[in-house]
Length: 419
Image (cartoon, rainbow, N blue to C red; front, side):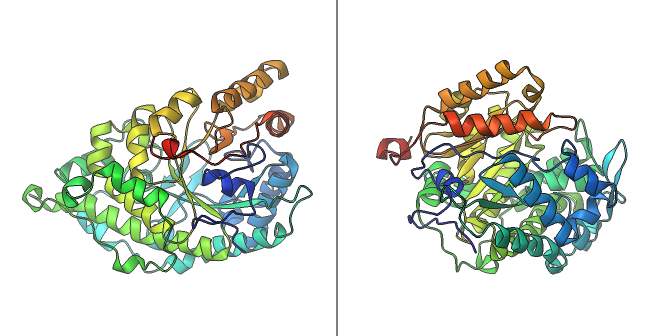
C-alpha cells in the first residue's frame, strides 16, 4: 500500500507529510545508507552474499532493509539496492571490485555504444519492486504512536549514472563524461523552449499543484537540442544518453511506486563536480523531466547531491518536493537557497557520528534549531553512514530527534510557499 498523497490530503506517514510540508507532530528522521557495513546484522548477511546478490534477491534485500529501520527506530525505510542496477538491462555489465568500488567493464565512449543501449528491458529490475512489496507489507500496520513508517524507493540521476557509464567507475575529474557532455554543444535552455514560463514559475507550478497519477511517460515532450550546434557523431551521444536514461529510470521508478514506495529519492551523487553553468546547460532539463515524470505518479520526490551548495538555487528548478542538503552548508542557509516553498532533508556530517556523545548531541540540536520547527524538515545525514560508525551513535541521533524535534503543527504560510 502506498501512503503518499500529493493531492492535498493528509498522509498517514509523518515522513511523507514532512516531504509535502504538511503538519507533523515532530521532525521525522532516517539515515542515508542506514543499512550498511557499520551494522553487524548486515555484515552477517554479507558473509554469505555479495552486494549484488543481496540487491537481486528480494527476500534478502527486504530483510536487510527492515532490520536496519527497526534497529534504528527511524521514520522511513529506504530499500536496499544500488544506483547502478539499471546499467545491466541497458547492456552494460559492471561489478564491485574490492578497493575500487563499482567498475563498468566496457565504458561508453562513442555514439554507437550509446545507440546500442537498451531501454526496453526495465522489467529485468522487478526484483527491486518485489523487495519493496515485502517491506511495505511488513510495515503496513501502524506503529505504536499511530504513525505509518514511510517506504522510500530510489534511482540515480541522469548525470551521475551517465558519469559512471562513461568513466567506467568512480572519477576525480570526469574527463570522459564532461568531454562527451561538452561535445553536444549548447542545448536549448528550458526557459527558451517554454518562453511563456520562467523556470522558477514552472517548477513552482509542479511543486504546488497536484500530481497526475495517470500521466503517461510516452506522451511527454522529448528533449530539445540545438541542431545548429551538432557538428559530429559525438555531438549526439550526450543528449541521446540523457533521453535513454530518463526513459529507463521512469519505468524503474514506476515499478517501485506500484510496489508500495511512498517517496522516490533521486541521487545525483556527482552533481557537485559541475559548475552552475554546466549543470544548467547539460543536466537540468533531463533531471527536471525525470522528476516531473516521477511526481506524475502521485508521490513526492527527494533530490540529493553532494558538495552542491552552489547548485541549490538551481536544484529548486527541478520541481523536486524535497532537496537534500549535504553537511557543508548550514541547514538554515541551504534552506534559504532553495526557498522555503521546498522541503529540505539533512544535514548532519556523517563523521560527527564518531564524536563524543555531548558533541554529537549538540550538533543534532543545532540542526533542529536552524530548522526552527518549520514544516518540511526531514532530519538526515549530509551523506551516507560510513563503515565502522558506532551503531549506538546512530540510534542516539534518532532518539534525540524524537526528543528534541519541534512540533510543526501549522501548515506553511502563503508567503512561505512562494518564498
